[in-house]
Structure formats: C-alpha cells, structure tokens
Length: 151
Image (cartoon, rainbow, N blue to C red; front, side, top):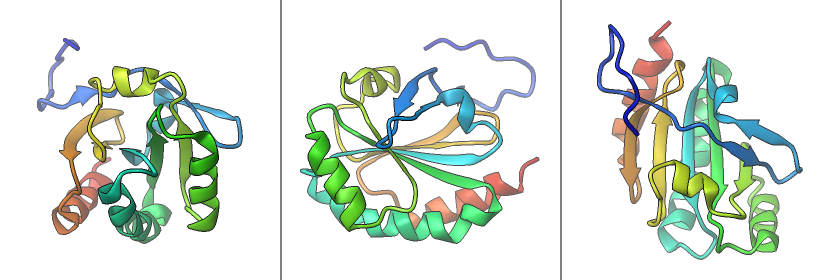
C-alpha cells in the first residue's frame, strides 16, 4: 500500500479508504473510524471460527464501548445477506455490521480471503495489528487498553 511515513511513524499503516454498507443501508467510511479505537472484523456466517469468536467480540465491544471503542463486522461477499441479517438479529449484535457485496472491502484491506481476519485500528485511523484466525483476546484487550489511553 506504500503509504508515506512521516515523522513519528511507528510502522502502523493507514487503514485503507473504503466505504462500508451497513445492514440498515447507511454507509460508513474509513474516515468515520477516526477518533475511536476500532476493531474491523471480516467474517462469514459459514465460518465456524467466526461464529465461535463472536461472543468474545461482543464481550470486548461491551467492555470498551463507553471508552471510545467501536466494532465493525464486515460480512464476506459470498455470505448471503439474508443469513447475515438473520445472524445479526438473532445474536443481537451490539455493533455495526456491513455486507461486502462486491468484495471491494476485503480487497482494499489487503485482499482478505481467510476468515476471520481482524484489524485493530487506532484513533488516528492506522492499522496497529492484524489477526488471522481468532485473536488472543487477553492480548487484544491489553492492546485496546493501550490504544484507548493514547490521545
């Protein structure tokens, strides 16, 4: 992605510019993530690990949401939208869910093919960490605490 690295750059790369279409039809862009620590999770209803980790993603969201933390779950293009809507409603997902109909979001974020693939984005809109597979949630929580403490 070759982003320019200005002074004070710690190897974190800017999150790719993309527009996410949420289940309610509204749109959110990468720029909207700035100012919060955001977990961007690429997942699918057909992915066993994704479904298994979702309660932990929900718990993490609920633990930090009042402190400037947000979650964006991006369903893969091959996931039928009706399945995604049904899953989000039956599990009462407390965060934004987007459907990547065209696969453009997955391509923009480094050609995501494996699910779950999760990115942690800092308040400045930079990707701090990428997890393929279920994250170590204890380590993830430590990193979130550190990022929330940044101004």
